[in-house]
Image 1: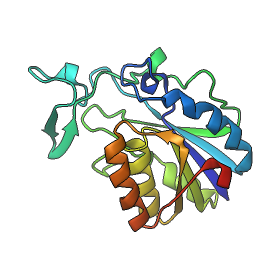
Image 2: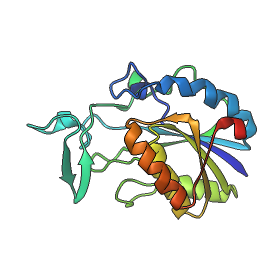
Image 3: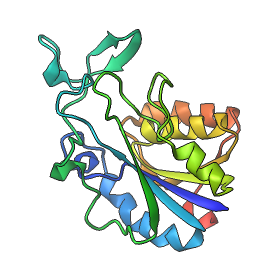
Image 4: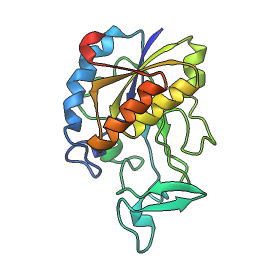
Length: 201
């Protein structure tokens, strides 16, 4: 089953959001235009409590993009973003969601971040996405969204670890850091992922 996973296309990651990704809004029409090419479409959604440990605002004498240790894991401190129930946590208003069969929320545990759509960063708890896809006999996953070098990247890695075929749709994704994304694309290819443009679907 050919499956599209739309990662975190939320207002706070748009150019006007609290954690803006350059041209993040430009992927919305691309994603809308490809959904009919898939048998199954699902989405992930960052859904943080306001007290989340990854927010710089919850640490004294720390600033945004500092890195600290939380429970033994390196944690970048982010601006408050995708807080539960806020406008910033909502999907972009132009994103078509009629075909989205399920939404998997992540980052809800205040003590640990969750970049991947499959697991938290410590691989302590599953979101249920892998089990859902396996139940439906989905094998070929195509992943896109925001940010390409963070949540999309880690979702692709976990998809491969779970035994799925994993493909990045590059023009339907945008990175926070272009330089990191260049390195991570090489890493993905070395691990067996494919990278395509939407016109190859």
